[in-house]
Structure formats: C-alpha cells, structure tokens
Length: 155
Image (tube, rainbow, N blue to C red; front, side, top):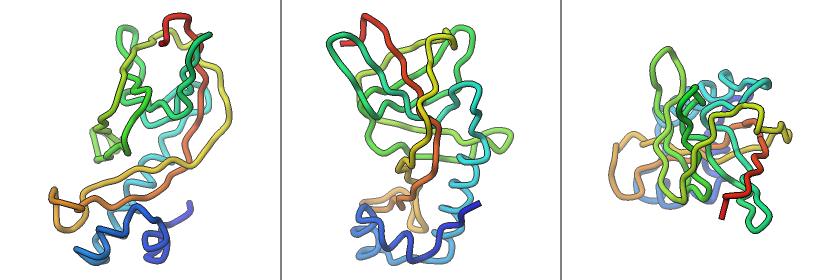
C-alpha cells in the first residue's frame, strides 16, 4: 500500500490554501492515509464500487469523470456526472462513505451496463485538523477503478 507522506500533501496544488492557513499536522497525514487505505482496499475489479470513476456516455454527451457516490443495489445507484472533489469519511464496516456536490445525477442499477475501463488516480478530500472551516479540507489521491456506462438518455 502506497502511504501518503507529508511531501505528497505539499505537492498537491489543491492543498495550497490549507497549508498556508492551517499548516500540516501529523493528524492530517494519518487521516489522509486512513482514507486512502479505505478507498484502495475496497476496490472490486468485478463490479463498480462507491468512489469509482464512471465515464458516462451517450451519442450526444460524454462525462469523463463521473463519481459513483454509493454502491449499486438492486434498486438504487447514485452517479454524479460532473462532481466537485468528493469528501470521504469512514462509514460502516470500515468502508468509505462519500459526500459529493456537482451534477447532474443519474442512477443505473444494471451491473451488465458497466464496462471495465482500467484504473486511474482520483482526487478526494477530508476535513483536516481544523475541522469544517474555510480551506479546511486536505486533498489526496487514491487509485480507483474506471467504468464506462453508455445510455441513450445521458444528455
């Protein structure tokens, strides 16, 4: 497992405001590593998992960086086609839980419609040692699976 080092957080441009305002504490590095490990350790090469990238395609549109917010169930899935950086928290049973803004949103529960398309690093964030405040999120990358979803009704 690739651990995040203090220098890694410093090297990500998205952490510039956080570092300038709050500085980096050991707690931030520990949190980034814990969230990173939760994400990486829950990837499933057989089916899309919450946190994976979904490339949403139709004949008239393509969204390269869709975010799967929740695991797919028989009656629900939640995909944000143009997400902001997703926040990640530790959920039940040591699984990551996400909070994402952006749009638009769609749902696809048929696993057969998802086609594996490799892996890619993705940017995530969590509230750092100062908590939920201005520029209080730390950003880090984690390797996730990428899936293609083609539907005629994606606009």
